[in-house]
Image 1 (cartoon, one colour):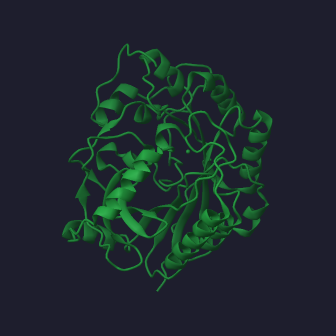
Image 2: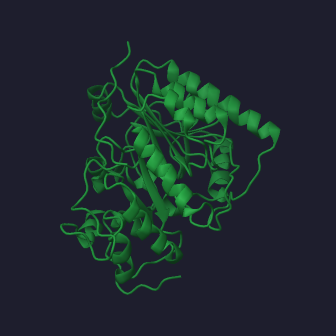
Amino acid sequence: MSTPKEPSAPVLAGHGRNGEHDRDRDRDHDRDRDRGRDHDHGRDEDHDHGRDRDGGHLSILYRGPLSSCDYDCPYCPFAKRRDGPDRLRQDRAALERFTGWVTGREHPVSVLFTPWGEGLVRSWYRRAMVELSHLPHVRRVAIQTNFSCRPGWLAEADLDTLALWVTYHPGQVSYERFLGRCRDLAGRGVRFSVGVVGLPEHLEHARRLRADLPAEVYLWVNAAEGHLYTDPEAALWTAIDPLFAYSRTPHRSAGQPCRTGDTVISVDGEGTVRRCHFVPAVLGNLYDGTFRPRARTCPAALCDCHIGYVHLERTGLYDVFAGGILERVPGALPTGPSVHGGVPEGFQPQRAQRAIGMPARRGTQTT
């Protein structure tokens, strides 16, 4: 029997370290799959009870074979990559198989599509988003996107369920065009967040965007891969995104309770299940019934990606992003961010860093 949809939170409308991942990690995952699966499928009784209390709700981060993108960002290994016809057919078939599996569930499901490339320029991703949004047991369907596509298809979707994680890439699209797309989304009542990579050359773009976006749209900032931020630099980004402290410093995660592998999983185009995109151990397969959810502490020393550390229990980010975990839309923020510099009143980044188990950086050198 289908479960009614979760009520939507108020509309508040991802790359860098928290949305883009290198191909070496993907190859490592493939090697791990070839070596064999993790047969530790036993259930953790306490966490199964937690699943039962929420009706067995399962969140899935899905990433198929697609790796082509229409943008040429210098910080992305998939910039302007082109998939051949065979690869595109493979990706389409894999996505249709996955959406068919979701359709057949009798428990609540939420989905975040995290393609290597740009999904929404492909008709099958737009169709999957629309179809899943109308299923009564699907609580949320979201996708990471540059939103270079035309927005007309959104008229067919259930906007109480669909959401977007939109990344602004200065240099790839004119500012006016991107801002126009964001305003169009807001006008349609689409639930979305917007973000940028925290590179020095993006700072003024981010300030301008924060000033021009509707106040209810959350603008997040991802710490750039390999970039260390001095405290004064971090304060500039925190003035735009009051939650930047969570991205600035990697989280110590080894041995820490994490929801991944239990109520949150990563699935690839073949149905292979892993706890998240960053831990290669295979937990089974979605389609052959070999995956069994089980609470597992994190085996990785550090977690520096939002779609990973948001699920670490010690961060408390499920409270911060209540109702908007997958699309990165906070339930509430500290007192509104200042777009002209300075840390927002009521937000203490040092406290946030202590809460995630990392010392505050002082006087670190940028790269």
